[in-house]
Image 1 (tube, rainbow, N blue to C red):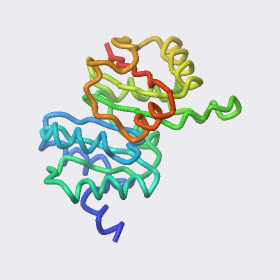
Image 2 (image 1 turned 90 degrees about the vertical axis):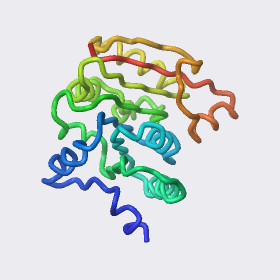
Image 3 (image 1 turned 180 degrees about the horizontal axis):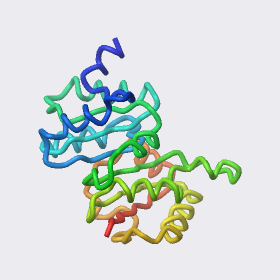
Length: 201
């Protein structure tokens, strides 16, 4: 049942990935990526509200993918969403230079223990991958509610120093995206998430 529901949206990690993606992207004005879409509330909302944009969603966990598929099933969603079920780094390494019009990384696993720091998705290597695949002027939007990861992201952006940091703030009216399950949980537990908007020059 799960495999059948996923079939129409699955971007398979094989030698045809780029040709399949390019063929699909021809029908849309822009291509956006969300890494780790969790339960899918954000990417589903974006796909509904930006029907001329192709949305690529990366998620490893079946429960999150299943929840997104249930949201799609309940709505009259356009066919502007693809789901990649392998590690997002594999996809970033395959995308051509200047391919994406924007990207989101919202509430990634913070890996708060020092010995696990190399597992955090925001790193010098991955920032370089984002910079490679984003078009000039495109934005990467990041959010976290973990104090360790917040400090880490600020440090990594400062070291990388190639993105223009347009906005480094707590959520306000400039962050016009719906709240995810993880942001709502953070607020209930007294943690105020931080948002970054960084642009490729």
